Image (cartoon, rainbow, N blue to C red; front, side):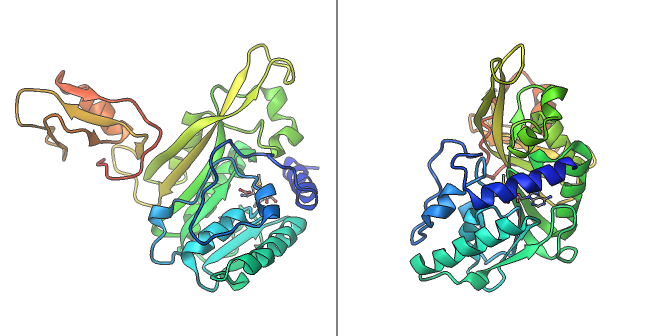
Length: 321
Ligand SMILES: C[S@@+](CC[C@H](N)C(=O)[O-])C[C@H]1O[C@@H](n2cnc3c(N)ncnc32)[C@H](O)[C@@H]1O
């Protein structure tokens, strides 16, 4: 059996017998006015953060959701798209598709605005998405890509890139590791399927996204997820996993490299009214200016009068490359 088959078997089990708290982090679940999430769907929250960013879902986008789980985020996206086929949800596991379908049918009873036709559930997998090139506005996946081995992650990211329209967004939430996960844990297929041992480090994860062609990456949240401790995981030191929410844009990669926004700002603290780096960045004295990490690095070398603030790991737009 391959590790992907082990994962499919595992998700078939947890589709039939929900495993509460399998992946999710302790955070307040997204609450939306007029949206009632069925109890079973809540119990099947197998995500590790959120991929639904309410302030960016105007204009009824077409969303391709990869790895439907119990259908929670597909329902949340449908809340914004509100039209037939606005959300296409893909999963290779028949039992998971059946559970999501049943949960969405339950959602109809409690949500007068919702119709099951808003979410089209399709058989398929992350490596072979059943939609045409450049056909969707958003691709989302929550706590799935981390289970893929490096080459498969690259394939899945390229496939997401293929189906996105130019300017489209890949919205992801995944565990990342604060240091490389040792081989003996990476090889444990069940732990990998449980989103506990396939995670890459932050740098590796972001590099994979850029290598697939995404020119801009924004980090929306980063927080503790799970501890792989010395007692249970045969480790000499504890290893913290974090969950990372990100949005990556299908825009060309600039010649000097992709823009990765992690919440840094530059503040000009000099005597003049403003600072101009002659490269498109004009900083008014005393006013924080959101910048990507590449620009932060470049500016830090230019002047002692520039203060670069730390990554907040919570960037929501408005910056300049
Ligand atoms: C950790 S669960 C996450 C479910 C959902 N995203 C959520 O947030 O609750 C992973 C999901 O991916 C599905 N899956 C497993 N292998 C997959 C693959 N190769 N391609 C697409 N989905 C897959 C599983 O059946 C399961 O529904």
